[in-house]
Amino acid sequence: MEIVILGTGCPKCRRLEQIAAEAVAEAGVDATIDHVTEIARIMSYDILETPGLVIDGQVVSSGRLPRKDEVVAWLREAR
Amino acid sequence: MTIQSLLQSGLGNLASYLAAHVLLCLLPAFFIAGALTALVPKEAITRYLGRQAPRIISYPAAALGGFVLAVCSCTILPLFAGIYKKGAGLGPAITFLFVGPAINILALSYTGVALGMDIAMARLLLSAVFGIGIGLLMALIFSRDDRGREAAGGAAFAGRARVGGRVWLFMLLLLAILIAGTLQVGILTNSYAHLTLPVPGLDRLESSLAALVPADAARGEEGVTAQGAILIGLLALIGISAWFGLNRVDEGYNRWTWVSLGLVALTLVVAAARLAPHAGGVDIAITGKLIVVVLGLGALWYVGHTRFDAYEIQEWLWETWRFVKQIFPLLILGVFAVGLLRPLIRPEWIEAIAGANTLLGNIVGVVFGVLMYFPTLVEVPIANMFLSLGMHRGPLLAYLMADPELSLQSILITASLIGRLKAWVYVGWVALFSTLAGLIYGAWVDGASAGLLAACVSLGLSALALGGAWLGRHRRQLDPPQAVQTD
Image 1 (cartoon, each protein chain N blue to C red):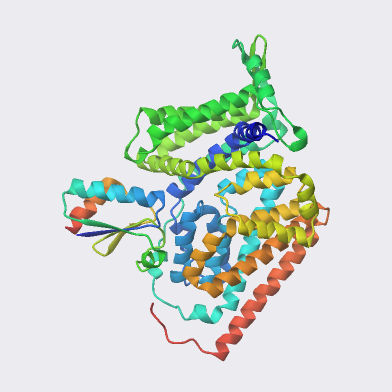
Image 2: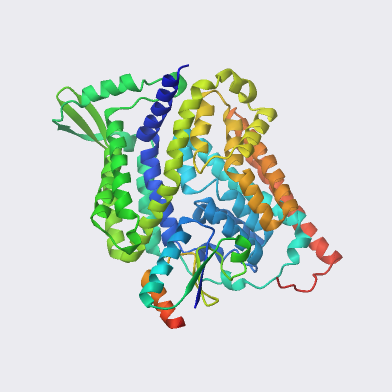
């Protein structure tokens, strides 16, 4: 599956990338993580505030830092 | 001027800032900034910035959003892009962009303590009013273009979250600690009891510090007391313990977390007390501040413990520490650099250019603000340096308005989002309004009546709003809205 992190490179966005990577390992799913930093591309998703987390084209969280267990649950759901 | 004396001036400036200004206002302000980011849902503001929101709501909401949402520039630009592309359009987005960097809680409390509450209030009021004015003007000038983008994207603004009572209570307690620490009124500064601790040697420490960092009131330099030295030590310890305790606090607490939180509380308490060392020990005055800070911390602990999830508190601490890591090191470097520079700049230069509230002085303040790029908050020690070198408060405000709003970097990013023409028109308005703000505030400092000035400003702005409304109606008759275009 495809995971996209939307963020302009602020600390929160980098932390979200770490959390996503850890969650992928914990959920045991096969996923690629892509970090989108250009504002124009970020705005093509339906989010208002970074950081955003997109799983298989679906925005699952934005504007906040989700917990690792939340992300694990979303990953298992999307599988 | 030898290298050694320059270095001493730099370190002295740093020490007196750390001991006197930074602590009491910035420590709680960072925690407030963290709480605003972690605990206040963005939708509480952004739902008023959607496409359907009427102008009378969306513009003030955008100005308020600058206060609540925009603590650092890395949140401002994405949100600006969002409001522009998917929400209320160019006008409110511009208002948000203008107001954000000037009136966030960190900038405001720091300006107030370092430069005076009057200039902080002027910065707050004039930024909000002029931000709305610039937003209206931009929407007016580019109204045709704005109507072309009646695109979808309302979902991003459909949130219905509200700020609950517990969050209000938490914020009020944090604000109470901030205000108690910084406000200089009798009821807070009077001491109500005394305590003597038999700690010898502090008086000797104090006299050797006075020799090392001489106080120089004429140049606005403050010495470092024994209490200040203790506070600097505590700050360093907070830095170390927070590094181990707060970097990963979103995953859970560890022993270092508790150490660093305890140190923060201790620092606030020590800073609120008044220490007077003498030969036999040290006298501790139990001031009104101290009582309010201790009660506030206790209440904060209780509310945080009983009304909030552990994860919410963890997120709050993480955001706070993130702001500290991002802003504080650069601020320290900036303060040190200002201390190095000050002996090199001659007061006569500053006085000749901006010593009085002239048009030229205000323009110079704005141009300097646009050309120079300083990290968040560093504009304040720089302004303080200019103030002590004899700059008039009017041009100083003009500089303070222009500096965080405009830098070449932010102009370029803004241009990539809204187009070069709009970005440069925006830059022109900001320069004009900042100059105007400096002139108005400077006139008030020089004794002009506040009522008269406020009347002039509101008259000008209402003319602007009426003109906008009239032109908007007029244009719609001239060319009916084009077909909806999805981009």
